[in-house]
Length: 122
Image (cartoon, rainbow, N blue to C red; front, side, top):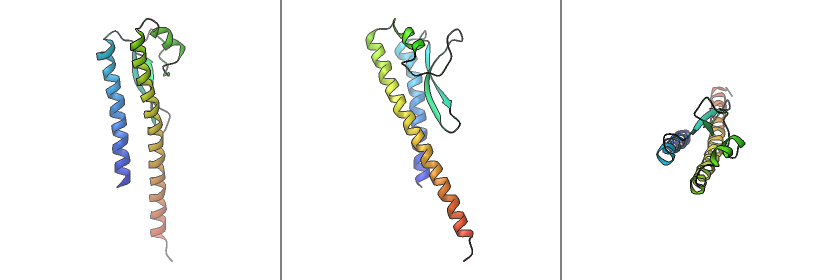
């Protein structure tokens, strides 16, 4: 029961990241060179900024990375503030995804222990 709730919340967070990514073009135009990209650290997907063009540095970075701040210098200060709001949401989204992964791991461990307990002969 709880695991399904956790997985549903994780799916909602991932959908929110996709929504933020899709909104970039509508808010900043087709020529906006940044996107929000997911990257797995082996256990959890985390969301970062990444340049869309292969002509630029394609690393997964936070908004305050030098390559990104240099690019954003030509934008209106209100647009940059909007991007900062998105970055803040991404930071919290990533934190929640890490926590949910820990919850799921703990549930899996508990389920394994319960199987062992039920299989034990006393």
